Amino acid sequence: MEQDSLEKYGLDPHCTMMLEEYREHKDSFNRILEISTGCIKNLLKQNGIMVTAVEGRVKSEKSLAGKLELKGYKYHSLSDITDIIGTRVITFYTDDVDKVAALAENSFDIDWENSVDKRKMHQLDSFGYMSLHYICRIPKSMYFDEAHPEINTTRFEVQLRTTLQHMWANMDHDCGYKGEVEIPREHLRNMIRLAGVLELADDEFSRIRTAVNDYRRQVQSLVAGGKFSQVLLDVDTFRSYLNMKPFDKLNRRIAAINQAEIHDASLMPYLRMFKYLGFKTLGDIENLKKESSDDAYQLATLEIGGTDLDIISATVALQDLCIVHILKSGSGEDGLAAFFDELNGPSDYNRKRAQRLVEKCARLPFMNKKK
Amino acid sequence: MKVTINQDGNKFNVILEGRLDTTNADQFQKDIEPLMNGDKPEITLDCKAMEYTSSQGLRMFLMLQKSVNSRGGSMVMTDMNPQVKEVFDITGFSNIIKII
Image (cartoon, rainbow over all chains, first blue to last red; front, side, top):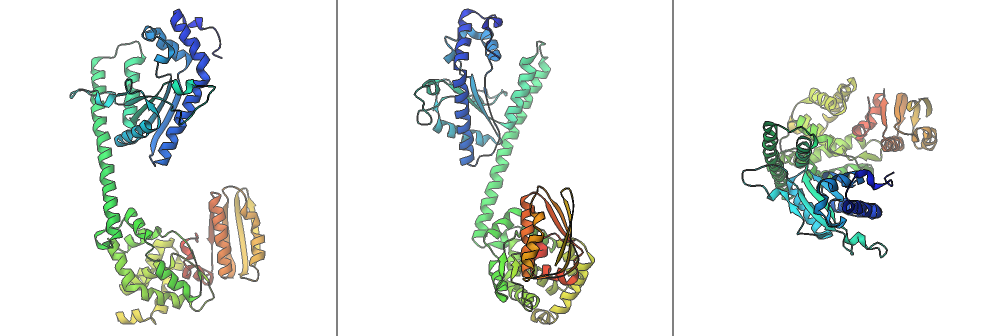
């Protein structure tokens, strides 16, 4: 489609020659884009870095012609134009821009002379475009094709920026360069003020992430150290706790009653139930486990001991511990019925099950101890 | 165990009648084969007339539940009599299979 005459762009002979060269090398440009973008995506995956997007493009002939029309005089040859092939990585956090940059440095040959960190170019009292631009080449160690040595010599650009920086850059481009109408100073000033706000927001996002990660590490350390009473009950802490398989022993004990197999199941829904029961810390759960495991085992023996059921869900230990807790706390039939309504959804059956359990458990030692 | 499957598109209303145990679990597995294929099935197991399920029956329901989950569908068991429901409760299966 683009293989028509280049004269339509009305460029001087020098620029027209560069466009011809562009056409000749278009396939190589696409190949370089494919290799560089693929490499970056792999690196992100291997290093567990989540990003908003990885975008790549080879500049279109029309766009290149436009660039040459405006400043073709600056370039001696096509190889002087470093943004014909461009990959952009848009991260969530400012810290991740530096992480991805380090990965790019280790993977590509960087043309440091032409790379620029726009984030560091602002004066103390100025705000605006913030991106890290690396001009790179594909090293032979990554890819080499004897028939296409230009793949290793052609430079391409990697732009790294946060989502907020990306948003600002797009808005700024729309406001500043798109139209022919000159934008009033007031609007440009507002854009620059916004850049300052977004810079603060980016820093704040990073700060919050660091604080949350520090908290997670601290909690994991407390959990690993068995300091459960200092750990508030939430999704993260409960998950860390469950990673220690705290109910496996009781489940195995219960399974042994009928030589049953244990079907693995998520215990996370019980976080909601512990909160419903008023548990505040992992220590509360740990205390329940210590104080009531024998009682829960007695309950399980009463329930499945007289049957030939030889499969149980991994939720049984927790379910029985909660039932014992409710009965020992004196909440009785009402407490149990409300618990089952919360756990499995409201039904008349839950009341009957609660009644049955209260009657059955009256024979168990822990109920008599309470009395 | 008698299994009657009524299908309307991806919706299956399955009526279960009688006892499900080791003696008829293999037949049950064959009977529910039509439920093991197709995307996003919405399966309702009507248990009003189901009299009993053994461990083998629980395994069958578990197998069906896993198959349904892997195909992005849903499965619900309804109208269980108290004796059958008790089996699901004391084994913890009522925590992992939706019963209404």
